Image (cartoon, rainbow, N blue to C red; front, side):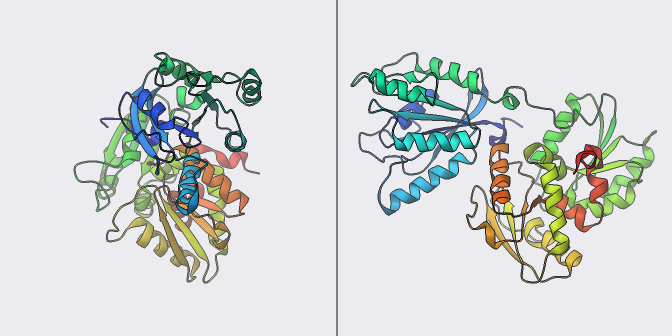
Length: 405
């Protein structure tokens, strides 16, 4: 991996009314002309993203958004896009001018507060009209240390923003947990089963496999990598049985028959269900598969957009496994990227991908939305394991059954 994937970066969203200075702030923070800046309100029409190394925080994504006070039919569409950015925001920067903190900013803050998203407040254009002490005190009811600045003239603004970002940065970003550090120990033998099929990028292996491999190296494990066709031979050549076998979920059926039942087995997708989402919630969601009925709608969400290939996991393999398991005629609906439907009530089950291209905040937001709509949610690997009758075995390494109600 040459650079940090976007999904693993801290997502910092910049929000506020039109012409408050959001785009100017993004340009100064990145030291580039990323967003178009104009005195005309509503210049930013779509979210603008910039990935960079922002020391001392490290890898981040800054997201400039359209004004939350946009008007007209197009303006409403821009506002809706801005609201979707909140789903994947780790830290929010709310910017306004000396007119103060009004309903728009208050509504934004309350939305962030509900989602446990830390907020930084920036009061811009202080060279033109200084904010009154009364208005400043009103803002402090929400954000303790609002930054007073004139973005274009403040040489310290980047340093000031950095200080506050470090202060409010979520601990799991500053000290990210190991993917498998609580499961494995140094010198454990781990076997990774990585099929080379049509879904494997030519000359590469996919991101979850790379990240798991690196994490195991960091944990000083001994790692053997093989394809499912060579797995039996690989296991026979080992002096001692491996501590754990991790497979691509699509090879679960073959691998589970080869790996002795005394050896723990799981998949890359199930590992990512734990680090990107909520493994217990996904496990409970899989139980809905058994009660699916004819004509039920199942929503399948993919983090990345790609052209469908022969035997595609989302559009061919998972529907095939589900139909074989349930014997029902099920309707499948697909959403890709950051697209996520509002009408969740019409679905009976949501199956999410491993989310290697999505940050954890967005996945947790989707889980929360499903809970509010009473919609069971699970993921690819857990779905496949359940359909094959090996789900209990596949989640055993994580000991979640010990804590299930």
